[in-house]
Image (tube, rainbow, N blue to C red; front, side, top):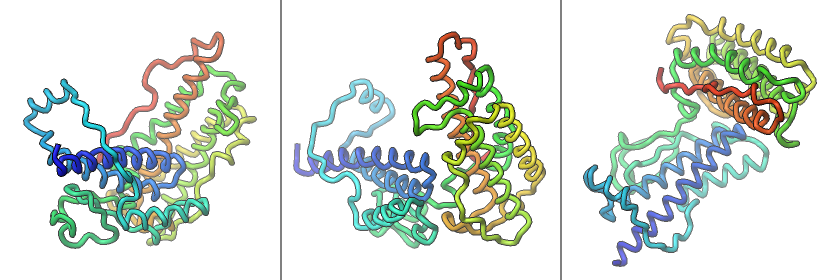
Length: 334
């Protein structure tokens, strides 16, 4: 193997491992509701992926589709090489990560004034922050072949129809996830620091109220400053453990009906009304709708897993198993 091939394989190994690391950290940041830090990690993940793909192609590992199928079937193992540093490999990435480190130390997400829009060159993985101007300074790739990581798009790109469809069906999902289990099981925590099904359901009702308040401000006020306070945390939902399940479900139903009444029949212009948020900067109602769906779906999936685990571990609870898919996906752009 030539020196050049050895270096390309080192880059491929290092960049591939870095891509997985950044992507996994992004998922964890999303779970912790640090969405701008997640956006930073995803941008750096895409940068490492582009670097790995570039090295992979230069090594001659990409041919026709038939040849690629043959490669996939034979599955050759790459030679082991020392990778060196796999994350924080550039001056800018280390600067961005240092900003995230300061925010995390203060128990918060990055603010809009601390992290601009990020753009990743899909040819070489160069990362740029702020306004995208001109070709990539590293390889000359045109701006059109850059992937954007903007705060206003990072929550998702669901359109009004998809947002409304999801919000309309959440009640049915919640009813199924809490059905057939007694209050003791619904209040049981899988671990001391993990929420019960009741707490998660109550938390969804709390957050729906926050979303509705923001939606109302966007619709009724010209470019409002959205409340900077974070939505209620799961810790504040502990009181729901002692409340009857039907009471929690009714609170969610009542809140969701008000939210749907506010959003039904809105024009495209209404969904694009903008305001300012301390963390996300310039946002519109579509952004906040995507935020609500992303947050709610993640917790519904968490509830489905918790229910499954409780039923699997509970003697005589087999009849309470839900076998069909309860939490469905949503198609981007609908």
